[in-house]
Each structure stands twice: as C-alpha cells, then as structure tokens.
Image (cartoon, rainbow, N blue to C red; front, side, top):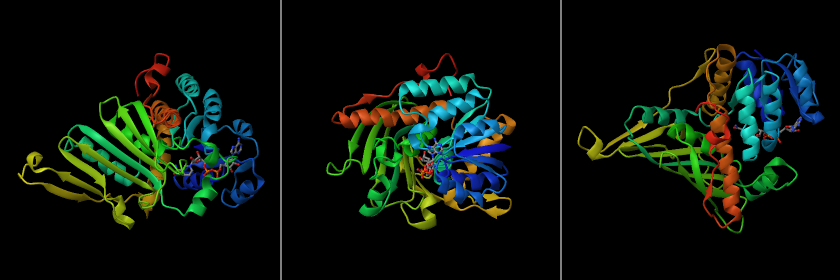
Length: 358
Ligand SMILES: NC(=O)c1ccc[n+]([C@@H]2O[C@H](COP(=O)([O-])OP(=O)(O)OC[C@H]3O[C@@H](n4cnc5c(N)ncnc54)[C@H](O)[C@@H]3O)[C@@H](O)[C@H]2O)c1
C-alpha cells in the first residue's frame, strides 16, 4: 500500500508507524525545509516535496493528513476526488458548511475517509467498549471524558501562545475531538446540544468543560486543555456510568492508568453484594514485538486504515462521526462566546444527501 504524508510534525511519527505496519511511504510533504530535512533519514526512498498538490502525481493508495488542525478538509476533499483514501488527523472540518462538503466528497468518492482517532482505539477505551457491549453496565446515563495535559505555565504559553500557529488560533473548544470521538463511539449516539464553560475566567483559553446532550438522552461531560493531574494514559481518562454499573479508567500513575475499574452495585450483581473488578488490557504485539501502551491507538488506526484500503473494511471512525465531533467544538465556541448558552449541534445526518446512517 503506497501512502503519502502531509505535515511532518505528528506526520513524521505517523509515517514511522506506517512503515512498521507494512505500508510503503512513497512521498511526504512539508512547506518548512527543516521539517523535510529532518524527515530525510527517517523516510528512505520517499520523495520529499514542499507543495501537497505534488503528492497527487505519485499514484498513492492513501494519504495521511497531519497538516494544520484547521486546514484538513480542503486537502481531504481533493484527495477523495482523485480516488485516494484519506486518513485525517484530529479535526474534520471548521464549520457545518465545510463538514457538509466533506461528507458529500466522501460519499461521491471511490475511496474512503477515516478519522485518525487514536483515542477511540486506546487500550482503556477498548476495555470500556467491551464492558458496554457485554451488557453489564446497562443503559449509559453519564459519560465523562478528559483530554488534559499537566504542563507548566511556560510550556503552555509556548504551545498555545502564538496566534499565528494553529494551536494558538483555534477556539479553546476546537480540540474536543479526542474526548468527543470516544463519547460517540462508546454511546453510538450523536451530539445534540452543547454548553461550554471556561475553567478559569482569568485564563479562558487554557481549559474548557463542555456538557453535551446526546441523541440517546445521555449526558456527556468533557474536559480538555491544560489542567494539572495529567493521566498517564496518553492524557485520556474516561468514565461511563450505566444504569447497572460503572466502568472507568483507573486514576493511577504509570501502567495502571490503562486499566479499567468496573463497579457493579449490589442490587445489580448476581452475588447480592457489590462487585469490584480491575480489568487490565491484553498486550498488543506487532511482528512479535510488544507495542507501548501509548502507541497502541496509533497502531490500531493504521492497521484499520490498511484493512479499509486493502480489504474494503469499514473505516474505524468514518466521516460522519468525525464531522459530528468537530462540530461540537464549533458549537461549543459559540456557547463560550455567549455566556455558556446551550447551542444546538448541526445534525450530521441532515447534512448528507440521502446516504445511510453510519
Ligand atoms: N492524534 C494525536 O495523538 C495527535 C498528536 C499530535 C498532533 N495531532 C494532530 O496532527 C496535526 C498536526 O499537529 P502537529 O503537532 O504535528 O503540528 P505542527 O504545527 O507541529 O506540524 C504541522 C506541520 O504541517 C506543515 N504544514 C501545514 N500546512 C501545510 C501545507 N499546506 N503544506 C505543507 N505543509 C504544511 C507545517 O509546516 C508543519 O510542519 C494536527 O491536526 C494535530 O491535532 C494528533
């Protein structure tokens, strides 16, 4: 499978893993010469170009989009138009109109769109998914997801303080995709309405909390940005309360942060007393070598992308939930600007032109 990669920050990391899962990285692009130079030794045999349009000339099967967060959709639409399968990093679109164009392009294309959501494929999220599917939690009432980085004020300013960089110019609600994508995958629901709150009024860009009503009737509470107390599970913590039991990431340091605590109340447990269990994810290996926990999500999304392109398997996170997760960030920004007023999230199914549900 011949792939190209656009954007050589996170993209170079993804390109390394593409090679490890058996893809051929034939071309890579970054407009910054130093980034291309840094990629040269790590991507032997790949053509390195400055303009992403040049990748259209390389008979690619797939393209990995890791350029600026708020600029993925135009590239995705172009590659889909040319029949190239797309794996796009953490934002699908910047508004509903662009989301609609992206869905239409994916529906029209002979190729597929996959959202590169490693947070859906992290070990603790998969364990919680299995607990939900076993029926032991009952119906989901409340789901909480965090994507929080514990960093010094200087490091935070270094990361989001430059308004010319995408991290500095996006709305503080925009990077909600690593919390919303697990919410949508675990509940199989759509976002309906969102109220967003700054955590600290004196530093409103640092962290936000969102309350998202879901189409299932459940409530999602999501927190993202920069707060102390970073979970070691790749900055992700997930808790799901069902009508019979709770499943949540263990709040612990190190390897145990990938484990999941399941608590079944006495009235719902066959033993007649409350049952507490701690589930540990099984190890993932790639060509006989163990994969570090933090990389498992990345490996799984790349294996899934390969299965989609080579064997026609459905994308792990297809275009509609990708657009829906991104539009929560857009509606959340509107809510933040208007005193946390509840703002409806555009219904992704009404953005389509006659296609089926996901
Ligand atoms: N899923 C994850 O765990 C994860 C982790 C980090 C970043 N990301 C995502 O990856 C994307 C990139 O993040 P990053 O941290 O690497 O950002 P970055 O700013 O460090 O890198 C982006 C690179 O893309 C290049 N670029 C941007 N537009 C381009 C264009 N039109 N043509 C050529 N090159 C272009 C820039 O020069 C830059 O080198 C973002 O969407 C981010 O959300 C995801």
